[in-house]
Amino acid sequence: MKQLSETTINKIKAVFNTGFISVMAMYLSKRAFDLLPDNWLFFITSDAMENFIAVCIAYLVYFHVFRLDSLWQKVGYLIFSALVLLGLALLKDLRTDDVIFFDDTFGQFTGFLGRTLLFYLLLYFMDKLDDLYNYKKLRDELDTAKAQLLRNQMHPHFLYNAFNSLYSLSLKNNEDVSEYIMKLSGMMRYLTDDTGEGKVPIVKELDFIEKYIAIEKLRFGKDAAIEFESDKAVMVDRFIEPFLLIPLVENAFKHGFYTNSKDAFVNIQCDLDGNELEFSVKNSVFRKQHFQQNNRTGKGLNNLKQRLDLLYNGHANLALHSDSDSYTAKLKIKLD
Image (cartoon, rainbow, N blue to C red; front, side):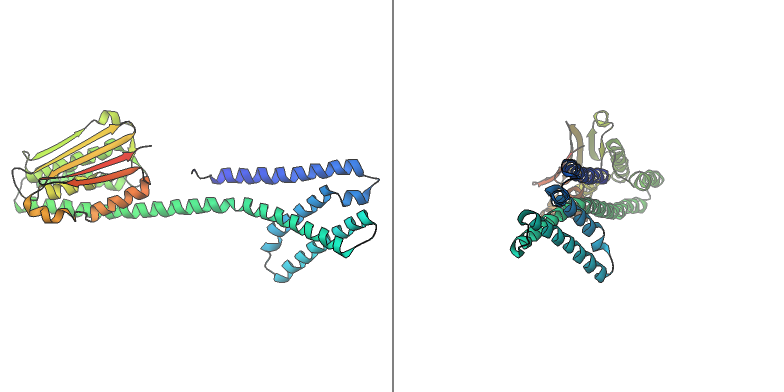
């Protein structure tokens, strides 16, 4: 259900208070026009006056009395309000019976108290609309902070894997180390400058993945069986929460090239089906890894699942599937 904004809530409260008081005042004015100046007692004990006094007491108690610091002041105001209602009950009993009967007066008094309490509760529930907004605002701020924390946890995880690759290249005295460092520098700039706030264009995430794949090709060789298919043209002006796709790619390279087998592969495909982003990563699996597959949910994937639940609230689905020689991760996200 869509939450009301603070501005909308304030407008609702203003319209309610203005309309409520205006209706009471108009009703009272009409009764005054009909009864005054000849029938003062009838006017003072009319339904219009009773409702008006009950509303005034309800507003006084809710917006002033219960916000006083002094207990004695609160008690004094409440006693005064009760005496006003009691006086009104006595006058009405006198008007209807020409004498005062305790039972009738008490019945009138409790009726006035009930009416005042009803108006008070109405004011209370209208005023508590603010709490609904504040709760939503606080929950959104908490979700944002949690999402930021999870995102920040991904950065060290990515850097750990990246520097592992750099270390592997350095051990081989690979001449491409300098190129690797330059590409890594560009990726770091994206992490620090572009993903700090809100969603990012999908094409930027795909560019980031392309740079990552280029780095991995430096590590495993340009002939490594690595495929990446995407149609960026259909994804222009579409946005996604940052750093949701790369964990699946990292995971695929970590396990797909577990050995230097010529059968190692990683296939990545990104499509847009209507309003749904489909991202699929498939990688090779080798016999030495089979014992790990059932528990293949490391920090990266666990972090990703938490972020998907938090950021897309049921509008994203991550499906994992493994067989004898491959492992597939399929991510579907409904876009705005």
